[in-house]
Image 1 (tube, rainbow, N blue to C red):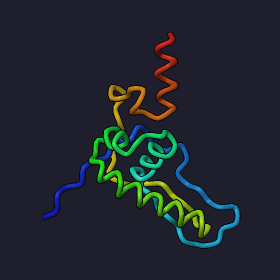
Image 2: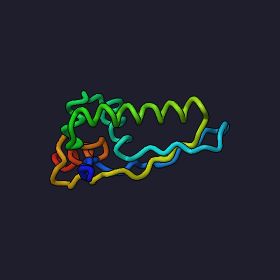
Image 3: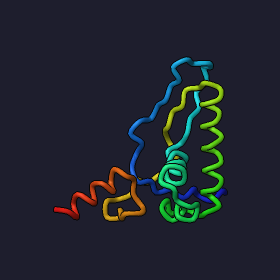
Image 4: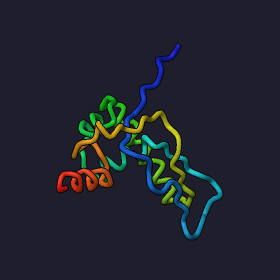
Amino acid sequence: MPRPRKFRRVCCLPAATEFLPRHVLSDEIVIMTIDEYETIRLIDFEGLMQEQCALSMNIARTSVVSIYAMARRKLADALINGKRLVIEGGDIKIAEEAEYDHVNCCRRHRHKLKREENT
C-alpha cells in the first residue's frame, strides 16, 4: 500500500484561477494544482530559495524540486501552445492565521500584518 500523501501548506488560494490567451490556439486545458502554483509563487515571485519554499510548505526540498519542475512544464505548455490554464486541486492545507509571519505568507497577508503592527 502506498504511503499517504502529505498535505502541502499554502498561504492562501490564488486570486485568479483561470487564464485564457486572447487568441486561443488549442481546445486543450492545462491544469495546475494549487501546490504547483504555490511553488511558482514562492520561488519565482517571492524570490525564496527551494529550501525556504520547502519550509514554508512544510514538505521536503526534494518534493519542492519535483513540484516546481512540473509547474514550470505546465506553464510553458500553456504559454507556448496557447492553452487555457486552470489552477485547482492538489493535496493542500491552507495555513492558519497563527502560522503567518513575514516570511511564510503571501504579500496580501504581509500587508495585513504590517497594518496590524502599525495600529
